[in-house]
Image (cartoon, rainbow, N blue to C red):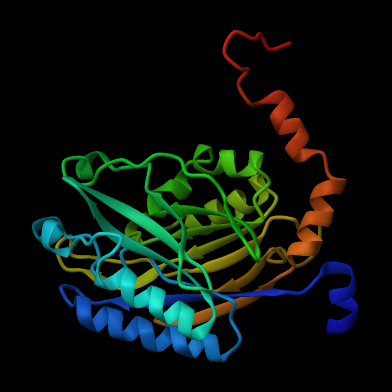
Length: 287
């Protein structure tokens, strides 16, 4: 069956999401736990392994400046070396320092250990704005597994955050997250909607544990959704390829990028979006 599937859909890309338990003020322990789980996911055959947002530090305003690291700091350097040694791609969140600014960022490390792309969260809570700088939209990342876009946490609430990726025909959108449980009711629906909005695969890499500053639990609920599912079926969860509960665990799914591309060519969604919804160029009028 897999051989027949590969003829029509191409090779599968195996994506693993590590739903890490983030320990408060325990950067080294969090990193150590992540490294162990990354190796475990790689041994199971994962091609892309995803970690939550700010997986090593969390976001704690009193220690923000101490916790933040640059893109060439020890967390990124360690993960680059591991990705190269295992021959896998890594996606993870980092509290990134750049000059006087601190960003809630996501990085994509390719199989050679190079930083292939990054993204800084654009959607900032009102209460965070004195601490976290706002990022700007980033281009799709061209990888051996397809075109990949990155989002961070609160971005999942806003369809606009991913629409540029849709216009560029993204294959996978990966949202690293550290959202709180009390705000998490709609998140599964939002992730499934973002997958359908953009007719692509959507990966939500969440975490568990407690933020010691806010005294709130992280929501868990990591999932991988297929936005190309069209058929109305008795199984209303047909688009959910993998779903985590509320504990530390690894969830995985195989993504058929060739199938996604084929379906995309047969459907008018992207062309109709560009025609009907993208703003006209400066000086042009829309018909």
